[in-house]
Length: 225
Length: 225
DNA sequence: CCTTTCCGATACGGAACCGTCTCGTATTTG
DNA sequence: CAAATACGAGACGGTTCCGTATCGGAAAGG
Image (cartoon, rainbow over all chains, first blue to last red):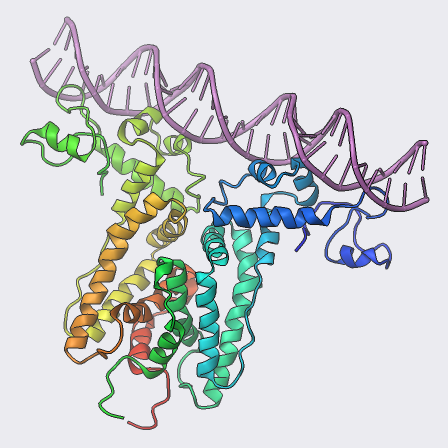
Protein backbone atom coordinates (compact mmCIF):
# COMPACT_ATOMS: atom_id res chain seq x y z
CA UNK A 1 0.00 0.00 0.00
CA UNK A 2 2.65 2.49 1.02
CA UNK A 3 5.36 3.90 -1.12
CA UNK A 4 8.36 1.89 -1.94
CA UNK A 5 10.45 3.81 -4.33
CA UNK A 6 11.60 6.51 -2.08
CA UNK A 7 15.15 7.56 -2.60
CA UNK A 8 15.52 7.59 1.10
CA UNK A 9 18.60 6.72 2.85
CA UNK A 10 18.30 4.24 5.50
CA UNK A 11 18.77 1.40 3.61
CA UNK A 12 17.59 -1.94 4.23
CA UNK A 13 17.68 -3.60 7.52
CA UNK A 14 20.51 -2.22 9.55
CA UNK A 15 19.13 -4.21 12.40
CA UNK A 16 16.21 -6.44 13.14
CA UNK A 17 14.07 -4.07 15.09
CA UNK A 18 10.30 -4.05 14.91
CA UNK A 19 10.50 -1.23 12.43
CA UNK A 20 12.43 -3.59 10.25
CA UNK A 21 9.12 -4.96 9.12
CA UNK A 22 8.22 -1.60 7.72
CA UNK A 23 11.69 -1.26 6.30
CA UNK A 24 11.41 -4.60 4.67
CA UNK A 25 8.47 -3.33 2.71
CA UNK A 26 10.93 -1.02 1.10
CA UNK A 27 11.85 1.93 3.02
CA UNK A 28 12.38 4.06 5.74
CA UNK A 29 14.17 7.17 6.59
CA UNK A 30 15.82 5.43 9.50
CA UNK A 31 12.64 5.72 11.41
CA UNK A 32 14.01 6.48 14.75
CA UNK A 33 14.40 10.02 15.81
CA UNK A 34 12.11 12.77 14.72
CA UNK A 35 8.43 13.02 14.16
CA UNK A 36 7.13 9.82 12.59
CA UNK A 37 5.36 9.87 9.30
CA UNK A 38 1.64 10.07 9.31
CA UNK A 39 0.53 6.78 7.78
CA UNK A 40 -2.82 8.32 6.93
CA UNK A 41 -1.14 10.48 4.32
CA UNK A 42 -0.37 7.46 2.14
CA UNK A 43 -4.00 6.43 2.29
CA UNK A 44 -5.30 9.93 1.67
CA UNK A 45 -3.07 10.46 -1.35
CA UNK A 46 -3.82 7.15 -3.01
CA UNK A 47 -7.50 7.56 -2.28
CA UNK A 48 -7.40 11.01 -3.85
CA UNK A 49 -5.75 9.63 -6.96
CA UNK A 50 -8.46 7.01 -7.25
CA UNK A 51 -11.16 9.61 -6.77
CA UNK A 52 -9.73 11.84 -9.46
CA UNK A 53 -9.31 8.98 -11.90
CA UNK A 54 -12.87 7.99 -11.15
CA UNK A 55 -13.94 11.50 -12.06
CA UNK A 56 -12.33 11.08 -15.43
CA UNK A 57 -9.08 12.94 -14.91
CA UNK A 58 -6.37 11.76 -17.25
CA UNK A 59 -3.15 10.45 -15.81
CA UNK A 60 -1.36 13.12 -17.78
CA UNK A 61 -3.68 15.77 -16.39
CA UNK A 62 -3.07 14.52 -12.89
CA UNK A 63 -0.09 16.64 -11.94
CA UNK A 64 1.71 16.33 -8.66
CA UNK A 65 0.84 19.94 -8.02
CA UNK A 66 -2.85 19.37 -8.52
CA UNK A 67 -2.77 16.17 -6.54
CA UNK A 68 -1.18 17.99 -3.61
CA UNK A 69 -3.89 20.63 -3.77
CA UNK A 70 -6.74 18.15 -3.98
CA UNK A 71 -5.37 15.90 -1.28
CA UNK A 72 -4.59 18.82 1.01
CA UNK A 73 -0.96 17.87 1.49
CA UNK A 74 2.24 19.69 0.76
CA UNK A 75 4.18 18.98 -2.39
CA UNK A 76 7.24 18.27 -0.29
CA UNK A 77 5.31 15.54 1.45
CA UNK A 78 4.62 13.87 -1.87
CA UNK A 79 8.22 14.04 -2.99
CA UNK A 80 9.34 12.86 0.43
CA UNK A 81 7.47 9.61 -0.16
CA UNK A 82 7.61 9.08 -3.88
CA UNK A 83 10.30 9.92 -6.37
CA UNK A 84 7.77 11.11 -8.91
CA UNK A 85 4.41 10.51 -10.45
CA UNK A 86 5.43 7.20 -11.93
CA UNK A 87 6.44 5.77 -8.57
CA UNK A 88 3.25 7.03 -7.03
CA UNK A 89 1.14 5.43 -9.74
CA UNK A 90 2.91 2.14 -9.14
CA UNK A 91 1.61 2.21 -5.58
CA UNK A 92 -1.86 3.07 -6.84
CA UNK A 93 -1.76 0.07 -9.13
CA UNK A 94 -0.65 -2.19 -6.31
CA UNK A 95 -3.61 -1.01 -4.26
CA UNK A 96 -5.90 -2.37 -6.98
CA UNK A 97 -4.58 -5.88 -6.72
CA UNK A 98 -7.81 -7.68 -6.04
CA UNK A 99 -7.64 -11.17 -7.43
CA UNK A 100 -11.26 -11.95 -6.77
CA UNK A 101 -12.79 -15.03 -5.19
CA UNK A 102 -11.20 -18.43 -5.35
CA UNK A 103 -13.17 -20.65 -7.71
CA UNK A 104 -15.11 -23.33 -5.89
CA UNK A 105 -13.73 -26.08 -8.08
CA UNK A 106 -16.96 -27.97 -8.61
CA UNK A 107 -16.68 -27.84 -12.37
CA UNK A 108 -14.79 -25.91 -14.98
CA UNK A 109 -18.04 -24.46 -16.20
CA UNK A 110 -18.99 -23.12 -12.77
CA UNK A 111 -15.51 -21.83 -12.10
CA UNK A 112 -15.48 -19.94 -15.36
CA UNK A 113 -18.86 -18.45 -14.57
CA UNK A 114 -17.55 -17.36 -11.17
CA UNK A 115 -14.54 -15.70 -12.72
CA UNK A 116 -16.49 -13.93 -15.42
CA UNK A 117 -19.10 -12.87 -12.91
CA UNK A 118 -16.35 -11.25 -10.88
CA UNK A 119 -15.24 -9.34 -13.96
CA UNK A 120 -18.82 -8.32 -14.64
CA UNK A 121 -19.44 -7.06 -11.14
CA UNK A 122 -16.18 -5.17 -11.11
CA UNK A 123 -17.14 -3.65 -14.43
CA UNK A 124 -20.39 -2.47 -12.87
CA UNK A 125 -18.83 -1.05 -9.72
CA UNK A 126 -18.29 2.55 -10.66
CA UNK A 127 -15.16 2.96 -8.60
CA UNK A 128 -13.29 -0.04 -9.87
CA UNK A 129 -14.68 0.28 -13.34
CA UNK A 130 -13.81 3.87 -14.06
CA UNK A 131 -10.47 3.62 -12.35
CA UNK A 132 -9.57 0.38 -14.00
CA UNK A 133 -10.69 1.55 -17.37
CA UNK A 134 -8.60 4.68 -17.02
CA UNK A 135 -5.60 2.90 -15.63
CA UNK A 136 -5.63 0.02 -18.03
CA UNK A 137 -6.08 2.19 -21.06
CA UNK A 138 -3.78 5.03 -20.17
CA UNK A 139 -1.15 3.07 -18.43
CA UNK A 140 -0.18 1.51 -21.72
CA UNK A 141 1.43 4.78 -22.65
CA UNK A 142 3.79 4.41 -19.73
CA UNK A 143 5.67 1.18 -20.43
CA UNK A 144 6.99 0.92 -16.92
CA UNK A 145 3.54 1.17 -15.38
CA UNK A 146 2.04 -1.16 -17.94
CA UNK A 147 4.71 -3.77 -17.29
CA UNK A 148 4.17 -3.54 -13.56
CA UNK A 149 0.40 -3.80 -13.84
CA UNK A 150 0.63 -6.63 -16.31
CA UNK A 151 2.97 -8.69 -14.18
CA UNK A 152 1.24 -7.94 -10.93
CA UNK A 153 -2.41 -8.27 -11.80
CA UNK A 154 -3.04 -9.50 -15.31
CA UNK A 155 -0.66 -12.43 -15.34
CA UNK A 156 -1.89 -13.71 -12.01
CA UNK A 157 -5.49 -13.68 -13.11
CA UNK A 158 -4.71 -15.27 -16.45
CA UNK A 159 -2.84 -18.06 -14.75
CA UNK A 160 -5.88 -18.73 -12.60
CA UNK A 161 -7.98 -19.09 -15.73
CA UNK A 162 -5.42 -21.38 -17.30
CA UNK A 163 -5.51 -23.60 -14.25
CA UNK A 164 -9.26 -23.96 -14.41
CA UNK A 165 -9.13 -24.74 -18.11
CA UNK A 166 -6.38 -27.34 -17.76
CA UNK A 167 -8.30 -29.11 -15.06
CA UNK A 168 -11.38 -29.02 -17.22
CA UNK A 169 -9.40 -30.55 -20.06
CA UNK A 170 -8.07 -33.27 -17.80
CA UNK A 171 -11.58 -34.01 -16.61
CA UNK A 172 -12.88 -34.25 -20.14
CA UNK A 173 -15.10 -31.26 -19.65
CA UNK A 174 -13.26 -29.19 -22.23
CA UNK A 175 -11.72 -30.14 -25.55
CA UNK A 176 -8.05 -30.93 -25.13
CA UNK A 177 -7.11 -30.18 -28.73
CA UNK A 178 -7.24 -26.40 -28.36
CA UNK A 179 -4.63 -23.99 -27.12
CA UNK A 180 -5.20 -22.99 -23.52
CA UNK A 181 -4.45 -19.35 -24.23
CA UNK A 182 -6.92 -19.30 -27.06
CA UNK A 183 -9.55 -20.88 -24.87
CA UNK A 184 -8.97 -18.31 -22.16
CA UNK A 185 -9.50 -15.50 -24.63
CA UNK A 186 -12.68 -17.08 -25.94
CA UNK A 187 -14.19 -16.96 -22.48
CA UNK A 188 -12.66 -13.84 -20.99
CA UNK A 189 -12.37 -11.44 -23.93
CA UNK A 190 -16.11 -10.99 -24.52
CA UNK A 191 -16.63 -9.91 -20.92
CA UNK A 192 -13.55 -7.72 -20.91
CA UNK A 193 -14.61 -6.16 -24.14
CA UNK A 194 -17.96 -5.17 -22.72
CA UNK A 195 -16.49 -3.94 -19.47
CA UNK A 196 -13.83 -1.80 -21.07
CA UNK A 197 -14.65 -0.87 -24.63
CA UNK A 198 -18.39 -0.66 -24.74
CA UNK A 199 -20.41 1.39 -22.40
CA UNK A 200 -21.13 -0.18 -19.08
CA UNK A 201 -24.74 -0.62 -20.08
CA UNK A 202 -24.26 -4.03 -21.64
CA UNK A 203 -23.29 -5.91 -18.51
CA UNK A 204 -26.65 -7.52 -17.91
CA UNK A 205 -27.50 -10.01 -15.22
CA UNK A 206 -26.88 -13.47 -16.63
CA UNK A 207 -24.08 -12.45 -18.96
CA UNK A 208 -21.42 -14.65 -17.39
CA UNK A 209 -23.49 -17.78 -17.79
CA UNK A 210 -24.51 -16.80 -21.31
CA UNK A 211 -20.94 -16.39 -22.45
CA UNK A 212 -19.63 -19.52 -20.81
CA UNK A 213 -22.45 -21.71 -22.03
CA UNK A 214 -22.39 -20.30 -25.53
CA UNK A 215 -18.67 -20.86 -25.87
CA UNK A 216 -18.97 -24.33 -24.40
CA UNK A 217 -21.85 -25.41 -26.61
CA UNK A 218 -20.89 -23.52 -29.72
CA UNK A 219 -23.11 -21.28 -31.75
CA UNK A 220 -23.73 -23.68 -34.59
CA UNK A 221 -27.17 -25.17 -34.45
CA UNK A 222 -27.26 -28.74 -33.17
CA UNK A 223 -29.68 -30.83 -35.20
CA UNK A 224 -31.11 -32.61 -32.23
CA UNK A 225 -30.02 -33.63 -28.74
CA UNK B 1 -7.91 11.31 -45.93
CA UNK B 2 -7.76 15.06 -45.89
CA UNK B 3 -9.30 17.19 -43.25
CA UNK B 4 -12.97 17.69 -43.04
CA UNK B 5 -13.37 19.83 -40.00
CA UNK B 6 -11.27 22.42 -41.64
CA UNK B 7 -12.63 25.89 -41.58
CA UNK B 8 -11.34 26.04 -45.08
CA UNK B 9 -13.27 26.35 -48.17
CA UNK B 10 -11.15 24.06 -50.26
CA UNK B 11 -12.92 20.79 -50.11
CA UNK B 12 -16.02 19.58 -51.79
CA UNK B 13 -18.55 21.49 -53.79
CA UNK B 14 -16.46 24.16 -55.42
CA UNK B 15 -19.55 25.54 -57.05
CA UNK B 16 -23.20 25.73 -56.22
CA UNK B 17 -22.78 28.64 -53.88
CA UNK B 18 -19.37 27.61 -52.72
CA UNK B 19 -19.50 29.70 -49.60
CA UNK B 20 -22.70 28.13 -48.40
CA UNK B 21 -21.30 24.64 -48.55
CA UNK B 22 -18.06 25.66 -46.92
CA UNK B 23 -19.85 27.50 -44.20
CA UNK B 24 -22.06 24.52 -43.58
CA UNK B 25 -19.06 22.32 -42.86
CA UNK B 26 -17.64 24.93 -40.55
CA UNK B 27 -16.63 28.42 -41.27
CA UNK B 28 -14.52 29.36 -44.17
CA UNK B 29 -12.39 32.19 -45.35
CA UNK B 30 -14.55 32.42 -48.45
CA UNK B 31 -11.90 30.96 -50.68
CA UNK B 32 -11.88 33.15 -53.67
CA UNK B 33 -9.31 35.78 -53.61
CA UNK B 34 -5.85 35.32 -52.20
CA UNK B 35 -3.32 32.55 -52.26
CA UNK B 36 -5.06 29.22 -52.02
CA UNK B 37 -4.24 26.86 -49.21
CA UNK B 38 -1.66 24.23 -49.79
CA UNK B 39 -3.61 21.01 -49.63
CA UNK B 40 -0.41 19.11 -48.91
CA UNK B 41 -0.27 20.71 -45.51
CA UNK B 42 -3.33 18.80 -44.36
CA UNK B 43 -1.71 15.55 -45.41
CA UNK B 44 1.64 16.42 -43.90
CA UNK B 45 0.15 17.38 -40.56
CA UNK B 46 -2.09 14.36 -40.22
CA UNK B 47 0.71 12.10 -41.37
CA UNK B 48 2.99 13.62 -38.76
CA UNK B 49 0.42 13.01 -36.04
CA UNK B 50 0.17 9.39 -37.10
CA UNK B 51 3.94 9.03 -37.12
CA UNK B 52 4.28 10.48 -33.65
CA UNK B 53 1.49 8.33 -32.26
CA UNK B 54 3.17 5.37 -33.88
CA UNK B 55 6.35 6.28 -32.04
CA UNK B 56 4.47 6.10 -28.79
CA UNK B 57 3.85 9.76 -28.11
CA UNK B 58 0.85 10.31 -25.89
CA UNK B 59 -2.00 12.44 -27.13
CA UNK B 60 -1.45 14.64 -24.12
CA UNK B 61 2.25 14.91 -24.93
CA UNK B 62 1.45 15.81 -28.49
CA UNK B 63 1.23 19.57 -28.21
CA UNK B 64 0.35 21.85 -31.05
CA UNK B 65 3.72 23.48 -30.60
CA UNK B 66 5.61 20.25 -30.92
CA UNK B 67 3.46 19.14 -33.81
CA UNK B 68 4.23 22.35 -35.69
CA UNK B 69 7.95 21.80 -35.11
CA UNK B 70 7.90 18.17 -36.20
CA UNK B 71 5.73 18.80 -39.21
CA UNK B 72 7.73 21.82 -40.27
CA UNK B 73 4.77 24.15 -40.42
CA UNK B 74 3.96 27.31 -38.58
CA UNK B 75 1.71 27.30 -35.57
CA UNK B 76 -0.45 29.90 -37.25
CA UNK B 77 -1.03 27.48 -40.09
CA UNK B 78 -2.34 24.88 -37.67
CA UNK B 79 -4.69 27.30 -35.97
CA UNK B 80 -5.79 28.60 -39.34
CA UNK B 81 -7.09 25.15 -40.21
CA UNK B 82 -8.16 23.68 -36.90
CA UNK B 83 -9.64 25.36 -33.87
CA UNK B 84 -7.50 23.32 -31.52
CA UNK B 85 -6.02 19.94 -30.81
CA UNK B 86 -9.40 18.31 -30.41
CA UNK B 87 -10.59 19.37 -33.85
CA UNK B 88 -7.34 18.21 -35.35
CA UNK B 89 -7.61 14.82 -33.71
CA UNK B 90 -11.11 14.45 -35.06
CA UNK B 91 -9.67 14.72 -38.55
CA UNK B 92 -6.99 12.20 -37.68
CA UNK B 93 -9.66 9.77 -36.52
CA UNK B 94 -11.62 10.25 -39.72
CA UNK B 95 -8.50 9.43 -41.71
CA UNK B 96 -8.44 6.02 -40.04
CA UNK B 97 -11.88 5.10 -41.27
CA UNK B 98 -10.96 1.95 -43.12
CA UNK B 99 -13.85 -0.44 -43.04
CA UNK B 100 -11.94 -3.27 -44.59
CA UNK B 101 -12.99 -5.59 -47.38
CA UNK B 102 -16.56 -6.41 -48.16
CA UNK B 103 -17.31 -9.97 -47.09
CA UNK B 104 -17.73 -12.29 -50.01
CA UNK B 105 -21.03 -13.63 -48.76
CA UNK B 106 -20.41 -17.29 -49.45
CA UNK B 107 -21.09 -18.32 -45.87
CA UNK B 108 -21.34 -16.71 -42.48
CA UNK B 109 -18.35 -18.73 -41.39
CA UNK B 110 -16.17 -17.46 -44.23
CA UNK B 111 -17.37 -13.91 -43.84
CA UNK B 112 -16.53 -13.94 -40.15
CA UNK B 113 -13.09 -15.32 -40.93
CA UNK B 114 -12.58 -12.54 -43.45
CA UNK B 115 -13.56 -9.89 -40.95
CA UNK B 116 -11.43 -11.28 -38.16
CA UNK B 117 -8.54 -11.74 -40.53
CA UNK B 118 -8.78 -8.06 -41.39
CA UNK B 119 -8.59 -7.21 -37.71
CA UNK B 120 -5.64 -9.52 -37.30
CA UNK B 121 -3.71 -8.04 -40.18
CA UNK B 122 -4.43 -4.54 -39.01
CA UNK B 123 -3.22 -5.54 -35.58
CA UNK B 124 0.02 -6.72 -37.14
CA UNK B 125 0.55 -3.65 -39.29
CA UNK B 126 2.73 -1.53 -37.12
CA UNK B 127 1.30 1.72 -38.34
CA UNK B 128 -2.34 0.94 -37.83
CA UNK B 129 -1.73 -1.11 -34.75
CA UNK B 130 0.27 1.34 -32.72
CA UNK B 131 -1.82 4.25 -33.82
CA UNK B 132 -5.07 2.49 -33.25
CA UNK B 133 -4.01 1.20 -29.92
CA UNK B 134 -2.97 4.65 -28.83
CA UNK B 135 -6.01 6.35 -30.24
CA UNK B 136 -8.52 3.85 -28.99
CA UNK B 137 -7.09 3.71 -25.51
CA UNK B 138 -6.35 7.35 -24.99
CA UNK B 139 -9.25 8.77 -26.85
CA UNK B 140 -11.58 7.43 -24.19
CA UNK B 141 -10.36 10.17 -21.92
CA UNK B 142 -11.69 12.75 -24.35
CA UNK B 143 -15.42 12.05 -24.51
CA UNK B 144 -15.92 14.10 -27.63
CA UNK B 145 -13.24 12.22 -29.53
CA UNK B 146 -14.42 8.87 -28.25
CA UNK B 147 -17.99 9.59 -29.29
CA UNK B 148 -16.87 10.63 -32.74
CA UNK B 149 -14.66 7.58 -33.20
CA UNK B 150 -17.31 5.28 -31.85
CA UNK B 151 -20.02 6.58 -34.14
CA UNK B 152 -17.82 6.86 -37.18
CA UNK B 153 -15.82 3.66 -37.12
CA UNK B 154 -16.89 1.25 -34.42
CA UNK B 155 -20.60 1.33 -35.03
CA UNK B 156 -20.21 0.86 -38.77
CA UNK B 157 -18.01 -2.17 -38.35
CA UNK B 158 -20.26 -3.68 -35.72
CA UNK B 159 -23.26 -3.29 -37.94
CA UNK B 160 -21.42 -5.16 -40.67
CA UNK B 161 -20.83 -8.04 -38.27
CA UNK B 162 -24.47 -8.01 -37.21
CA UNK B 163 -25.55 -8.27 -40.83
CA UNK B 164 -23.39 -11.32 -41.41
CA UNK B 165 -24.68 -12.95 -38.25
CA UNK B 166 -28.32 -12.28 -39.02
CA UNK B 167 -27.95 -13.78 -42.45
CA UNK B 168 -26.23 -16.77 -40.93
CA UNK B 169 -29.11 -17.17 -38.53
CA UNK B 170 -31.60 -16.96 -41.36
CA UNK B 171 -29.67 -19.58 -43.30
CA UNK B 172 -29.60 -21.90 -40.34
CA UNK B 173 -25.84 -21.65 -40.09
CA UNK B 174 -25.96 -19.99 -36.70
CA UNK B 175 -28.20 -20.55 -33.72
CA UNK B 176 -31.11 -18.15 -33.77
CA UNK B 177 -31.77 -18.30 -30.03
CA UNK B 178 -28.80 -16.10 -29.06
CA UNK B 179 -28.53 -12.35 -28.93
CA UNK B 180 -26.82 -10.93 -32.00
CA UNK B 181 -24.73 -8.53 -29.95
CA UNK B 182 -23.55 -11.33 -27.72
CA UNK B 183 -22.64 -13.42 -30.74
CA UNK B 184 -20.68 -10.55 -32.24
CA UNK B 185 -18.66 -10.22 -29.06
CA UNK B 186 -17.98 -13.93 -28.93
CA UNK B 187 -16.33 -13.76 -32.34
CA UNK B 188 -14.78 -10.32 -32.36
CA UNK B 189 -13.67 -9.77 -28.78
CA UNK B 190 -10.99 -12.48 -28.68
CA UNK B 191 -9.27 -10.98 -31.70
CA UNK B 192 -9.64 -7.43 -30.45
CA UNK B 193 -8.32 -8.46 -27.08
CA UNK B 194 -5.18 -9.87 -28.61
CA UNK B 195 -4.71 -6.94 -30.94
CA UNK B 196 -5.10 -4.30 -28.28
CA UNK B 197 -4.48 -5.60 -24.81
CA UNK B 198 -1.90 -8.28 -25.24
CA UNK B 199 1.33 -7.77 -27.02
CA UNK B 200 1.16 -8.07 -30.76
CA UNK B 201 3.05 -11.34 -30.57
CA UNK B 202 -0.04 -13.49 -30.22
CA UNK B 203 -1.56 -12.79 -33.61
CA UNK B 204 -0.48 -15.98 -35.26
CA UNK B 205 -1.31 -17.12 -38.74
CA UNK B 206 -4.51 -19.12 -38.57
CA UNK B 207 -5.97 -17.27 -35.63
CA UNK B 208 -9.07 -16.01 -37.40
CA UNK B 209 -10.11 -19.49 -38.46
CA UNK B 210 -9.30 -20.90 -35.05
CA UNK B 211 -11.51 -18.41 -33.27
CA UNK B 212 -14.41 -18.68 -35.66
CA UNK B 213 -14.40 -22.45 -35.77
CA UNK B 214 -13.96 -22.82 -32.03
CA UNK B 215 -16.86 -20.49 -31.31
CA UNK B 216 -18.99 -22.20 -33.93
CA UNK B 217 -18.29 -25.73 -32.77
CA UNK B 218 -18.03 -25.02 -29.08
CA UNK B 219 -15.25 -26.07 -26.77
CA UNK B 220 -17.10 -28.91 -25.09
CA UNK B 221 -15.95 -32.28 -26.33
CA UNK B 222 -18.39 -33.92 -28.74
CA UNK B 223 -18.72 -37.61 -27.98
CA UNK B 224 -18.60 -38.65 -31.61
CA UNK B 225 -19.61 -37.26 -34.99
C1' DC C 1 0.11 46.93 -59.66
C1' DC C 2 -2.65 46.11 -55.69
C1' DT C 3 -5.23 43.46 -52.64
C1' DT C 4 -5.99 39.27 -50.43
C1' DT C 5 -4.81 35.22 -48.41
C1' DC C 6 -1.50 31.72 -47.38
C1' DC C 7 3.11 30.30 -45.71
C1' DG C 8 7.05 29.54 -42.15
C1' DA C 9 9.07 31.67 -38.46
C1' DT C 10 9.11 33.74 -34.29
C1' DA C 11 7.97 36.82 -30.50
C1' DC C 12 4.63 37.61 -26.88
C1' DG C 13 1.96 37.33 -22.34
C1' DG C 14 -0.22 34.21 -19.59
C1' DA C 15 -0.76 29.77 -17.54
C1' DA C 16 0.49 25.26 -15.56
C1' DC C 17 3.77 22.31 -14.05
C1' DC C 18 8.22 20.38 -12.11
C1' DG C 19 11.36 19.54 -8.37
C1' DT C 20 13.84 22.00 -4.78
C1' DC C 21 13.93 24.75 -1.02
C1' DT C 22 12.56 27.53 2.86
C1' DC C 23 9.40 28.87 6.33
C1' DG C 24 6.79 28.18 10.83
C1' DT C 25 4.90 24.56 13.39
C1' DA C 26 4.12 19.90 15.35
C1' DT C 27 5.75 15.59 17.27
C1' DT C 28 8.95 12.25 18.88
C1' DT C 29 13.48 10.59 20.85
C1' DG C 30 17.46 11.18 23.77
C1' DC D 1 15.52 20.91 26.92
C1' DA D 2 17.71 20.09 22.21
C1' DA D 3 18.07 17.53 18.00
C1' DA D 4 15.72 15.35 14.38
C1' DT D 5 12.15 14.65 11.40
C1' DA D 6 7.43 15.33 9.50
C1' DC D 7 3.82 18.44 8.25
C1' DG D 8 1.16 22.24 5.25
C1' DA D 9 2.02 26.15 2.66
C1' DG D 10 4.08 28.33 -0.74
C1' DA D 11 8.14 30.87 -3.05
C1' DC D 12 11.42 30.06 -6.63
C1' DG D 13 13.65 29.45 -11.34
C1' DG D 14 13.14 26.81 -15.23
C1' DT D 15 10.48 24.50 -18.70
C1' DT D 16 6.69 23.78 -21.83
C1' DC D 17 2.61 24.87 -23.67
C1' DC D 18 -1.40 27.83 -25.44
C1' DG D 19 -3.41 31.00 -28.64
C1' DT D 20 -2.54 35.43 -30.79
C1' DA D 21 0.01 38.65 -33.33
C1' DT D 22 3.45 40.22 -36.45
C1' DC D 23 6.79 39.88 -40.18
C1' DG D 24 8.70 39.23 -44.91
C1' DG D 25 7.81 36.66 -48.72
C1' DA D 26 4.90 33.86 -52.03
C1' DA D 27 0.93 32.91 -54.92
C1' DA D 28 -3.48 33.87 -56.61
C1' DG D 29 -7.33 37.24 -58.46
C1' DG D 30 -8.78 41.71 -59.97
